[in-house]
Image 1 (cartoon, rainbow, N blue to C red):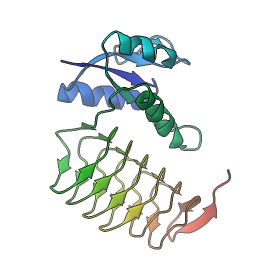
Image 2: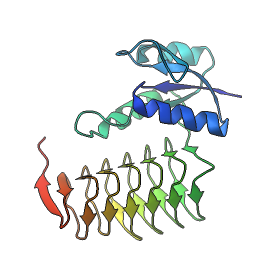
Image 3: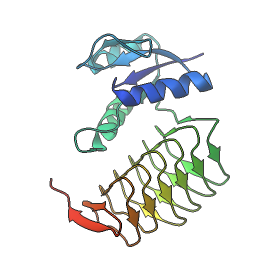
Length: 212
């Protein structure tokens, strides 16, 4: 079985580790995180990401982000990790749980994590680094751009477009398009399009411009 390194040792890393172990897709060589020491779920933290080049020289050719969010649900963290490991020549696989329902005709990019219980309907396109947490439902013919994060239980209606780096909170219901870098608060019902760089919250939904 080929080896993989996980970059980032936060809570999300445990989800990645669980997926790999359940699917028996790779042998986990270790975690890289310059801010932490010790282990996560029995996987040792080897050091910081400066070790990536050395590990590749030792025959590890696969890497995956173990962190997706920074402060205030900044989904750019995942993008920065994936871009770095791709630049070093690593393969960034998709980790899709066999306990998820994936229907036909979809197109998946790379670095995607799909957790158990998720349902992805027909002809859905998922961009690079998308995270689909447990019990998420994505309706048919949706276009989800790069580095979007769906928290658990979020529901996406059919034929929607979700812009790059959007974050959709737990249990949110989306019935209209979301612009790039939008954030949708947990439990929000989105009935009208949300412009890029806005926060949607409440029911009925209200909008607030993101502070940069």
